[in-house]
Length: 295
Image (tube, rainbow, N blue to C red; front, side):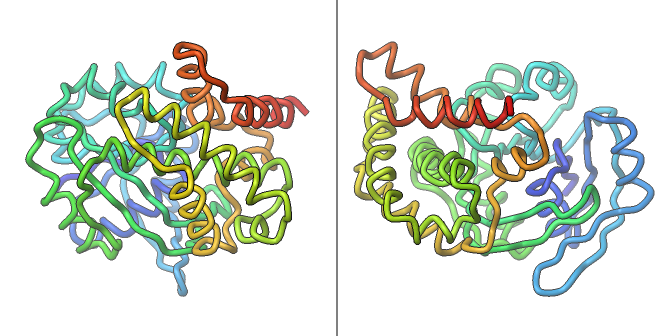
């Protein structure tokens, strides 16, 4: 299968490495110089042991692909959507953080070609050409519309070594993952700790319950039922499973990069304003991370 991975960050390189054993994988980068480095030097994925991969990487969108896997930062959409639309892809799979990614892609590719995935692997980027797996989780994938490739996508992921399964309701799965991200990523940034260290901070359980309450109300506006207790417990499990991982948002803060706080907390805040309910905890987290970005 011909797979194009748009966004060779930590997660993108993980998927590229794992899937390249059984598929024709190409990397698509937005930066010409960075693409040239990856194309010439390749990259390493360390998961117990280091594996080196040499895959083509460029900035030109291929004309065709069996699977276009989207893994770039969500704030890059404004410039990337139009370019990606030139690729005649049989299926488009987003593994990105936050809410609204499937909807954005559906506007370009049509609802029935779009698939979403919730990824709970912990991955840290050690350099421009090296990533390390810090915790094994799962990949749940499903069709956004009436697409019939979910089974094939899950099979490809399984053959690549991922713990993959089909999601019963991908919209609910993505909301649940977004809620977990809201519990872990901004809080880890504020305390400047790895995921597992959150479990040792006395205030965090109450904070997670409050975040989960905000997310539950926001998800309900999309017709999704998520119990706050379930979400808070899921966050605890993921923090435990990825205890050594430094979340992507904290990696961005430490490197002086823009974070994905808008797509992670912004959608909850937007829905709270439109539907007249309070999302004070998420608003506080949003402001705190924005201040960290500035400083």
